[in-house]
Image (cartoon, rainbow, N blue to C red; front, side, top):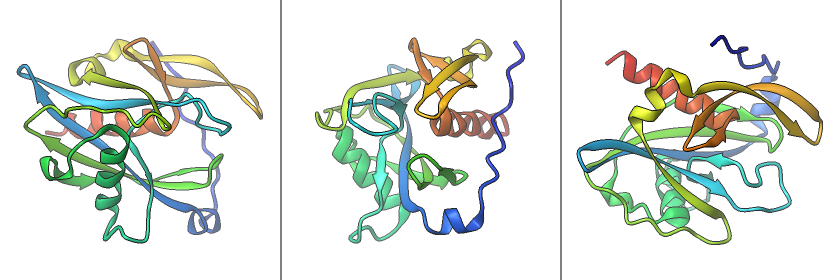
Length: 183
Protein backbone atom coordinates (compact mmCIF):
# COMPACT_ATOMS: atom_id res chain seq x y z
CA UNK A 1 0.00 0.00 0.00
CA UNK A 2 1.41 3.38 -0.94
CA UNK A 3 0.84 6.06 1.68
CA UNK A 4 1.30 9.80 1.33
CA UNK A 5 4.44 11.15 3.05
CA UNK A 6 4.30 13.29 6.17
CA UNK A 7 3.70 16.95 5.38
CA UNK A 8 6.52 19.48 5.16
CA UNK A 9 5.55 21.92 7.92
CA UNK A 10 7.99 24.75 7.07
CA UNK A 11 8.87 25.38 10.69
CA UNK A 12 11.20 28.25 11.53
CA UNK A 13 14.10 28.03 13.97
CA UNK A 14 12.47 30.81 16.00
CA UNK A 15 9.42 28.63 16.63
CA UNK A 16 11.45 25.71 17.93
CA UNK A 17 13.69 27.94 20.08
CA UNK A 18 10.61 29.30 21.88
CA UNK A 19 8.94 25.90 22.22
CA UNK A 20 8.37 24.16 25.51
CA UNK A 21 10.83 21.27 25.99
CA UNK A 22 9.54 17.75 26.61
CA UNK A 23 10.66 14.14 26.45
CA UNK A 24 8.96 10.80 25.88
CA UNK A 25 10.17 7.30 26.72
CA UNK A 26 10.16 4.59 24.09
CA UNK A 27 10.78 1.59 26.32
CA UNK A 28 11.38 -1.83 24.83
CA UNK A 29 11.01 -4.59 27.39
CA UNK A 30 10.76 -8.35 27.33
CA UNK A 31 7.79 -10.41 28.41
CA UNK A 32 7.29 -14.12 27.78
CA UNK A 33 10.32 -14.17 25.44
CA UNK A 34 8.95 -11.40 23.19
CA UNK A 35 9.85 -7.71 22.92
CA UNK A 36 7.15 -5.12 23.68
CA UNK A 37 6.89 -1.36 23.87
CA UNK A 38 4.53 0.85 25.85
CA UNK A 39 1.97 3.32 24.53
CA UNK A 40 -0.70 5.25 26.38
CA UNK A 41 -4.10 6.54 25.42
CA UNK A 42 -4.31 10.03 26.84
CA UNK A 43 -7.30 11.00 28.93
CA UNK A 44 -10.03 13.22 27.56
CA UNK A 45 -9.35 16.89 28.26
CA UNK A 46 -9.74 20.27 26.58
CA UNK A 47 -6.53 20.21 24.55
CA UNK A 48 -5.10 19.28 21.18
CA UNK A 49 -3.78 15.87 22.30
CA UNK A 50 -6.93 14.69 24.08
CA UNK A 51 -7.58 10.93 23.71
CA UNK A 52 -4.55 10.46 21.43
CA UNK A 53 -2.25 7.45 21.50
CA UNK A 54 1.19 8.54 22.67
CA UNK A 55 4.40 7.50 24.35
CA UNK A 56 4.59 8.23 28.07
CA UNK A 57 6.30 11.53 28.69
CA UNK A 58 5.91 15.22 29.32
CA UNK A 59 7.37 18.62 30.00
CA UNK A 60 10.88 19.27 31.31
CA UNK A 61 10.85 20.39 34.95
CA UNK A 62 13.51 22.47 36.73
CA UNK A 63 14.62 19.51 38.86
CA UNK A 64 15.40 17.33 35.81
CA UNK A 65 19.16 17.00 35.35
CA UNK A 66 18.84 16.11 31.65
CA UNK A 67 16.31 15.20 28.97
CA UNK A 68 16.60 11.45 29.65
CA UNK A 69 15.70 12.06 33.28
CA UNK A 70 12.61 13.98 32.10
CA UNK A 71 11.46 10.98 30.04
CA UNK A 72 12.12 8.56 32.92
CA UNK A 73 10.39 10.77 35.51
CA UNK A 74 7.34 11.30 33.33
CA UNK A 75 7.05 7.59 32.43
CA UNK A 76 7.19 6.78 36.13
CA UNK A 77 4.51 9.37 36.94
CA UNK A 78 2.19 8.34 34.10
CA UNK A 79 2.47 4.52 34.03
CA UNK A 80 4.78 3.49 36.91
CA UNK A 81 7.85 2.54 34.83
CA UNK A 82 10.65 2.42 37.43
CA UNK A 83 13.59 4.58 36.21
CA UNK A 84 16.23 2.28 37.73
CA UNK A 85 14.82 -0.63 35.67
CA UNK A 86 15.54 1.22 32.39
CA UNK A 87 18.84 1.28 30.53
CA UNK A 88 18.84 4.42 28.37
CA UNK A 89 20.31 3.67 24.94
CA UNK A 90 20.02 6.89 22.95
CA UNK A 91 17.89 9.85 22.01
CA UNK A 92 16.04 9.66 18.72
CA UNK A 93 15.33 12.65 16.45
CA UNK A 94 13.76 15.69 18.07
CA UNK A 95 10.28 16.60 16.86
CA UNK A 96 8.51 19.96 17.01
CA UNK A 97 4.74 19.82 17.59
CA UNK A 98 3.19 23.08 16.29
CA UNK A 99 -0.36 22.72 17.76
CA UNK A 100 0.95 22.49 21.34
CA UNK A 101 4.31 24.27 20.80
CA UNK A 102 6.38 21.41 22.23
CA UNK A 103 9.85 20.36 21.14
CA UNK A 104 10.01 16.66 22.04
CA UNK A 105 13.05 14.44 22.50
CA UNK A 106 12.26 10.72 22.31
CA UNK A 107 14.46 8.59 24.58
CA UNK A 108 14.98 4.95 23.64
CA UNK A 109 15.47 2.59 26.55
CA UNK A 110 15.38 -1.11 27.29
CA UNK A 111 14.44 -3.23 30.28
CA UNK A 112 14.84 -6.93 30.93
CA UNK A 113 11.61 -7.05 32.85
CA UNK A 114 8.01 -6.09 32.28
CA UNK A 115 6.87 -2.94 34.10
CA UNK A 116 4.16 -3.26 36.74
CA UNK A 117 1.91 -0.71 35.08
CA UNK A 118 -0.28 1.68 37.03
CA UNK A 119 -2.05 4.38 35.01
CA UNK A 120 -2.12 7.91 36.41
CA UNK A 121 -5.88 8.46 36.14
CA UNK A 122 -5.86 12.18 35.27
CA UNK A 123 -3.44 11.76 32.35
CA UNK A 124 -3.80 8.18 31.12
CA UNK A 125 -7.04 6.54 30.03
CA UNK A 126 -5.46 3.24 28.98
CA UNK A 127 -2.04 1.55 28.75
CA UNK A 128 -1.21 -0.40 25.59
CA UNK A 129 1.54 -3.00 25.61
CA UNK A 130 2.38 -3.62 21.95
CA UNK A 131 4.55 -6.46 20.62
CA UNK A 132 7.48 -5.10 18.63
CA UNK A 133 6.63 -7.70 15.97
CA UNK A 134 3.29 -5.92 15.42
CA UNK A 135 5.07 -2.62 14.73
CA UNK A 136 7.43 -4.34 12.29
CA UNK A 137 4.55 -5.80 10.26
CA UNK A 138 4.26 -3.68 7.05
CA UNK A 139 0.46 -4.02 7.04
CA UNK A 140 0.10 -1.69 10.05
CA UNK A 141 0.93 1.38 7.91
CA UNK A 142 -2.33 2.91 6.65
CA UNK A 143 -3.89 6.24 5.77
CA UNK A 144 -6.92 8.01 7.21
CA UNK A 145 -8.60 11.38 7.42
CA UNK A 146 -7.79 13.17 10.67
CA UNK A 147 -10.34 15.68 11.97
CA UNK A 148 -8.88 18.69 13.72
CA UNK A 149 -9.99 22.15 14.81
CA UNK A 150 -8.30 23.54 11.70
CA UNK A 151 -10.07 21.14 9.33
CA UNK A 152 -9.67 17.63 7.99
CA UNK A 153 -6.53 16.23 6.38
CA UNK A 154 -5.21 12.90 5.16
CA UNK A 155 -2.45 11.40 7.26
CA UNK A 156 -0.45 8.20 7.40
CA UNK A 157 -0.91 6.27 10.62
CA UNK A 158 0.01 3.01 12.30
CA UNK A 159 -2.81 0.63 13.17
CA UNK A 160 -1.60 -0.83 16.48
CA UNK A 161 -3.96 -2.82 18.68
CA UNK A 162 -6.81 -1.39 16.59
CA UNK A 163 -5.84 2.17 17.57
CA UNK A 164 -4.85 5.01 15.25
CA UNK A 165 -1.28 6.07 16.07
CA UNK A 166 -0.40 9.16 14.06
CA UNK A 167 1.56 12.39 14.21
CA UNK A 168 4.68 12.61 16.35
CA UNK A 169 4.17 9.18 17.93
CA UNK A 170 3.93 7.53 14.50
CA UNK A 171 7.06 9.38 13.36
CA UNK A 172 8.99 8.24 16.45
CA UNK A 173 7.88 4.63 15.98
CA UNK A 174 8.76 4.80 12.29
CA UNK A 175 12.25 5.98 13.24
CA UNK A 176 12.50 3.02 15.64
CA UNK A 177 11.61 0.67 12.75
CA UNK A 178 14.38 2.25 10.67
CA UNK A 179 16.82 2.10 13.61
CA UNK A 180 16.11 -1.62 14.08
CA UNK A 181 16.49 -2.36 10.37
CA UNK A 182 20.09 -1.07 10.54
CA UNK A 183 21.02 -3.55 13.27
